[in-house]
Structures are given as C-alpha cells and as structure tokens.
Amino acid sequence: MLDLQTLVLFSTASLALCATPGPDMILVAARSAAQGRTAGLVTHFGVAAGSAFHAIIMALGLSQLFLAVPYAYDLVRYLGAAYLLYLAWQAFTATNSFSVKSPGGKQMSLLVIFKQGLISNILNPKVALFYLALFPQFLDPANGSVAVQIIVLAIILQVVGLGVHGVVIWLAGSMSLLLSNGRVFARWSRYFLGAVFGGLAARLIFDGQR
Image (cartoon, rainbow, N blue to C red; front, top):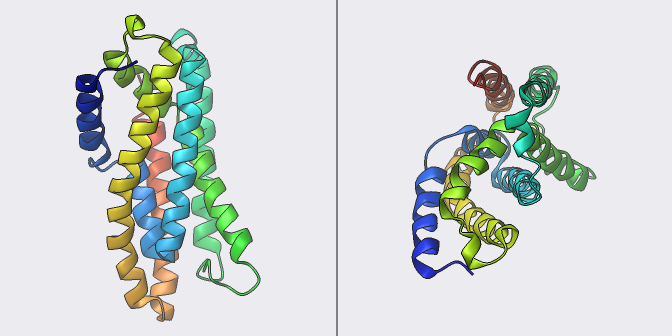
C-alpha cells in the first residue's frame, strides 16, 4: 500500500496540475459559461469518466501502445481532433442556446453533454501519456500491486480535479446566470463554445506532435 508521504506528495502534485489551465478546464469553463453550472458539472463528470478510462487502460498496461506504435497515437489524436471539430460545427450551426433546461429534453441534453466530455477525453492520447509520465514517479512494486496503486492515485486525482473544477464551474456559471435571458448572449455563447471546441481541436493537432 502507498505510504502517507507518497499520498501527500501526489495530492500536492495533482492540485498543482489540476489548477493549471488545460483543455479539460477550458472545456468545463466554456460549457459552464455558455449553458450554466449543471452543464459544466455534467461536462466535468464526462471528462472524469474519460480520465478514469485512461487510468484503467494504464493499469492494464495498454497505454504503452502509444509509445510503441506512433501510428496508433496519431490515429487516436486525429480522431479526437475530428470529433472536436464536429462539436464546433454543431455549436456554430445550432438554432437555440443548447439549454439543458428545455422542457422534455433535460435528460437527453445532459446525456449528450456527458458523452461529449467523455469522448473528447478518451480520444485525447495526451491524457494517456500524462498518466504514463506522472504516475510511475509514485509507484513502487514493493508496496504491492501496481495496478491497485494506479487506481488509488487515479481516485486521488479525480477528487482533486472535482474540487478545482467545482470552483471553475461556480465562477463561470455565474456569468451564465447573469446573462442567460439575453438573446444576444445566447447566440454569442454558442459561438464561444464553438471557438473553444475548434481551439482544442487545433491544439490537439498541432501541439500533439511528439
């Protein structure tokens, strides 16, 4: 089992990393500002589920595939960029404000938002490489099953991420609450969200070169 010092060090490192603006934080903030805190929170849960997927894959040893087969990394990276561009297109061409509070459509809207956060995270191979770069520094086979240690560290990272994103969601959601009744805001919130998706796609393409 991991010792207390390792857990404290990893928690500190996780806080520093989660508090640094990145694609996940930008996506959560944009969704919160455009559609409110509920949408932002659901987006976070989608991203967190994708992150958990990468942790499980790492525990199974499959993330090494990205290091061993560069083409696999590039394939997933371009698929992720294509998906984000598709979301950007949807945002720019939508005829409403994507409100998750629309009558009769709340559950479906939240499900779609969750799936978008989930898929965008899963199709980002840099997340898998992040796990490969960070986690080994805190793993020790002498402390028991490495897979169990990875899961424990992943849970800590998830808890820290929820705390940080919770603050982001609350702050960004305040803007949505103040301006949600304006048609102009509704239109520009779509453009803003579409620009974020497009920017994340470009980042994944151009910054993903290893």
